[in-house]
Length: 236
Image (cartoon, rainbow, N blue to C red):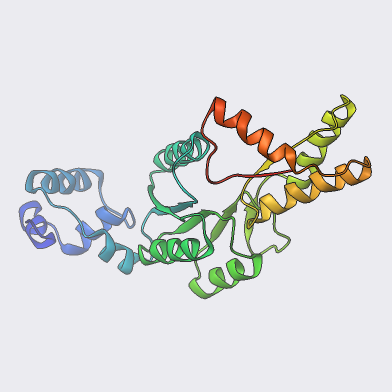
């Protein structure tokens, strides 16, 4: 396997010049840069990306943690994240958060060990406090998807789950519906809890008693159409 010294010798340049070409910094003549790149290709030289990351404190990699990969929704997020990373000239490293608090912690640590420049995490289970503390301890910028936090030190964006569930319920109630079931994400997640609370609040304001029989009926209807994903909860 070719080394950086082999590249230096074949191209007739110093190790510092090869490093500047690899890292994309410093002044290097275009003709020299092209000669170094051609030599690396000819020798089959593969730079040690981890060593580069350690030396330059940047890996040109973006980390992404998703709860799972078993839906078109998360597939779409993955597709657009990969497209965005590619357009920016970055690598995208993807880890399964296993739809649990411990899985999200392990995913963050795995991506941190890869020295990602920043990490995006679709977090359902870790608190705002824990995520902020993790970012502070590791000095790696976090972007939290599907959540809306109050702190200015932690980047986050997502939908207003309470507002959306309220609008959906108000629409159904305006149409005269009274027997309404709620299909939501896991109830151990903030998203599921916010949607359920809005659903229950609208029932209460309309003087509608929750009907547990609706859950069984909704499950039967869904089972006939498609398999109910394990990552959802049905309540009534």
